[in-house]
Amino acid sequence: MLDHFRLDGRVALVNGGAGGIGSGLCLGLSKAGAKVVIADMLDEKILQEKAAALKAETGNDAIGQYVNVTDEESVAKMVNAVVEKFGTIDICINSMGINLKRPALEFPMEDWDKMFNVNVKGTMICCKHVGGLMKENKKGSIINLSSVRGIRGYTGGNSAYCGTKGAVELITKTLAIELAPFNVRVNAIGPSLVITPGTIHIQKDPELAEKYKALIPLGRLAQVEDMVGPVVFLASDASGFVTGQTIFIDGGATAS
Image 1 (spheres, rainbow, N blue to C red):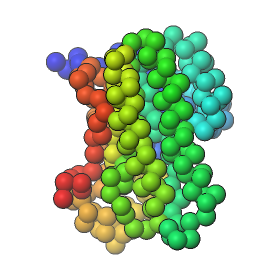
Image 2: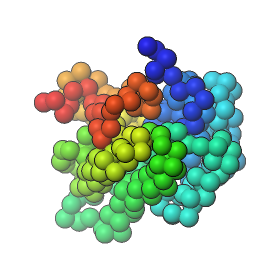
Image 3: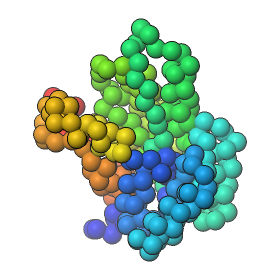
């Protein structure tokens, strides 16, 4: 039964793979047996160094690949490069995202456009190009990064972020329906606040940490490691009859 969770021999592309959540997912997928492509907007030399470190840690093949997810030509070039290297893409994780917090009534439209460009358009372009390859292969698993903010409003300048994640929610469901006849599954994970290098200040501030913990029935903040199990599940044969779903990794926040 545990073999259903293994990813041996499969190729996993992680867009945003050098980010706080993405890097943890790369490690988890690699430990599960996948060949991992760390795709991000960093210099290729840095990405290759990260890939070499990942390979050294797990023993499984890994490469770095530059991509600008908002540029369709860049995404197409990335997909071609991965196919040239590994022959296919079995798993695609879209974890690239940004959050610019602004009061709703003062939100600069250039910031609004930037967020929708990365979080929504970037996700869709990657789904389009990788989904096309998976359609041809008649198999594959796409996993998008949504959020609890995709189904719930929240204060603190999150109008654009909530809007982008709501869009990711429905893109995920619609693509799941369109690609189901080709045995391509499309799902998402929806974390609550995750502690990464960009949010570690929250965990280090007792007052602020308690504020966020009060929203979580399990009484603690999410760590990157909490994302790995659900993603490996959605990437593996263990979830072979699961598509169009979002797993909310939120300690029970959306249950109340």
